[in-house]
Length: 141
Image (cartoon, rainbow, N blue to C red; front, side, top):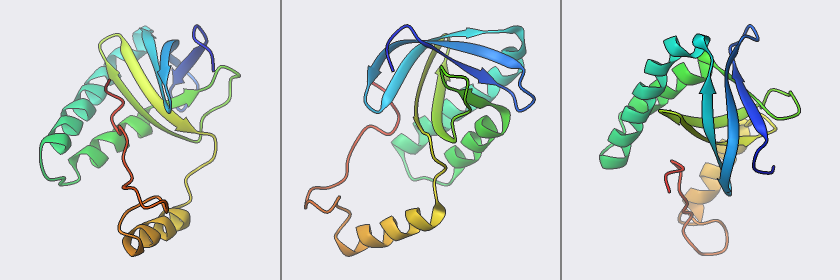
């Protein structure tokens, strides 16, 4: 996906909430300028709460607050790719007029996740190559 392309956020009824003009990328993350419509304003507190919860998780033990906050984001929005298709899975953050996300075209299969978790436990949490799995899960640069 090139820079300058636009993704969009819609509600589950198809109402346009915001355009996302891609400005940068750092695999697997895309970064964009958020161009909200008036319909986005009531959702901003949901995104603000998600960021606050994410910061708490980064700084201490996870009590599930971030997952609950992010469930509200997912319940409120649908991420639409530049071809007009809804993305099955995504992790999206919004701060002011900036948005960043990663996505997957296919739904996550919970059975696959459980199988991977069991494999990770057996091999000490590595990716099979003997190195610890790591990466930026927040998209912060």
